[in-house]
Structures are given as structure tokens and as C-alpha cells.
Amino acid sequence: MFGKPLKMAGGFLLGAVLIAAGFLVQLVCGPVDWEWIAFPFNIILLFVLLAVLAVMFAFKDRVGFFGWAGSSHAAVPAFAWALVMTIGMGLIAQIPEKGWLGSMTTFWPFVLTYVWLTIVVGLAALERIPRLFTTWRVLPSLLLHLGFFITLVSASLGSADKQTVDMTITEGESQTEAVREDGTSVSTGLSIHLNDFIMETYPSGMPKRFASDVVVKGHSGKEVPAVIDVNKPIKVDGWKIYQYDYDSKAGTESRISVLQLVKDPWLPFVYAGIFMILAGAFLMLFTGFNKEDVK
Image (tube, helix red, strand yellow):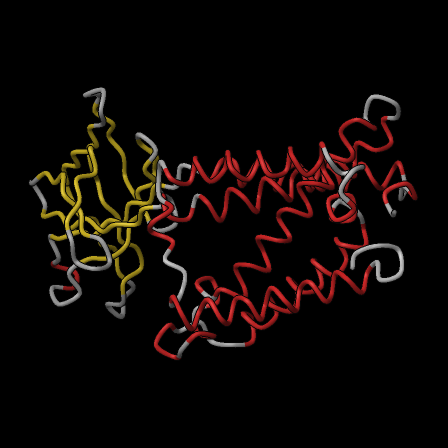
């Protein structure tokens, strides 16, 4: 099916099959629940993915499908199907209450399309690593593929580990507990004391600036004094702390600050992948397009 006669057509056919299979899984099992891949299961899945890629690469000369999966004949349709899904997500309002298409990141056809794209990009990166020892001109392409692979894996497997919680503090008091979107409380491991809630207004009385003068105590016990402004967060023990809200009913007399705390342990890997993509694209300006990358 995936030999020379079909080549790229086989890729488009496989993409269609994955989308159809995704619809079937969606009907039987419901949407993807990303919560179940939180640490440590995402690490296990990462090793499984790397093992699958290693086996496919090792036997690419013996199994035709494996060799084809690492070629442009598989990559172009995989990117095309992923682009279609991404455009669909952009055109359709992402409101879960609207149905399957209102939450594309939990829609099985979308997820399976990107899983296949990740495998294809991973194999393409592996194809280029040995060539790097014979010619440096393959480096831009390697950086592009490897960076894209790292970005895809980190953004997907790390999504369940991301935490976004709100912490409400009254002036003169300290707080360690925060609240998730579903209303459940969680211990942040931080103790934040609110010295003063700062409110500046325009002559009309409209808020001009609101900020929190705080002291944050982390795991080490070290106290970090800071003023947290809107769009000027601070980072302590992996948490990014943003000025989020205040007691709007009290207005300028508010003594309550609402901080938003975000922790995303996989974000540095996403940034690393994006940096590699940009570096690869920049280097390609000088090396030009390598015809050996199209097989």
C-alpha cells in the first residue's frame, strides 16, 4: 500500500483513515481526557514513543512502511491534514458546550492526526542525525525537524501537568491555598503575604493601575519581597505569579487582591523546541534548501 506506486497518495489515505478511526473512538469512548496522562504517565508515554521511533528507524530498510513513514511522501500529507485540523480549530469557536468541534484538543481525529505527525517528524529527525556526521548542511533541516518534534511532544504530554490557580488574599494576611477552575483547593507550596493592595485611578475614577505589594516565601524559606503589577509577574519555585483581579465591588477601597499562579514544568522544553525551529530557519537562509531532504 505504501510502496512507490502510491507514495504521497498513501499518506493522504492514511490520514483519512486516522480521522475516520478518531470519529469511531470519539463515539465509543468520548473525548480525550488529558488529565490521565499527568505525571508520571506522560513520562511513560514519552519513553514508549521514543521506543517506537527507535524500532521504526532501526527496521526502516526491512519494513517498507517504516522507511516510507520517515520520507517526504508521508510528511507532506501529515502536515496537510494537521493544517486542515488547525484551520478548523481557528474557524470554529472553541466552546466545549458546542459539541465535539468546540473542543478540538480533546477531539480524537485531531489528536490522532497530530500523533501521526509527531511520529513522522520524529522519524525525519532521526533520518538526519547520521547525515550530520558527513555534511553540516543538513544541520538546519535537523534543527527544524527536531525542534518541531520537541515542541509537539512537550506541548501535548505536558498539558496535563500545567496548573493554573487563583489565590485571594486580604491586606495584612498570608495565604498558602489556591483554587482551581473547578472550585477545588490546592496547596501551592508558597506562602504569600499581602502588605498592601495598590490602586491608582484616572481623574474619572476609572482604574489606572492595580498591583500587590507582597512577600513570597518559597520552599527554601527565603522571603522574596515584590510588587506584582498587571502583565509584570514574578517567578518563585516554578510558579509564575500574576496580578489578576481585586474586589471590584469595593473599587478603589479594595483591600483584597486576586493573584493567578501558573506552573508549567514542560514550558522550557516548548521554548527550546521553538528556538531550534527558529535557528534552523535562520541557518537555512545561508545554506539554502537541501535537495537531499526530499525523498
